[in-house]
Length: 82
Image (tube, rainbow, N blue to C red; front, side):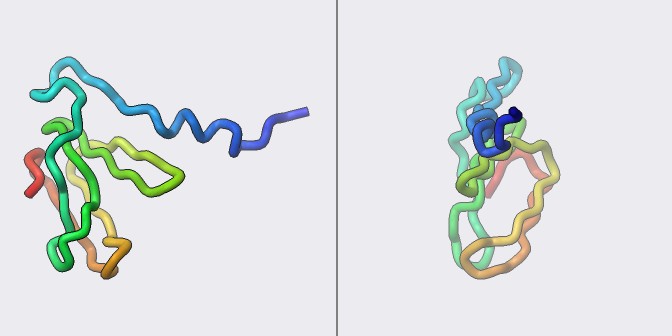
């Protein structure tokens, strides 16, 4: 009997920690929607963390995301989110 994939969602919630980042894996800088100001993700200067329940993504740059609030497309290719 195989386990259903929902039993493995805990793996998607792991935060990637890196020693070379300026904040040592702490995602502290906000990335907000350019139109409505809703929080889209957080960056540590090396990677971007985007949380949309039940998933938690850690991605590299450039990053694009559609705002779940207003639907506008947001793109950042800088490692310092604004």
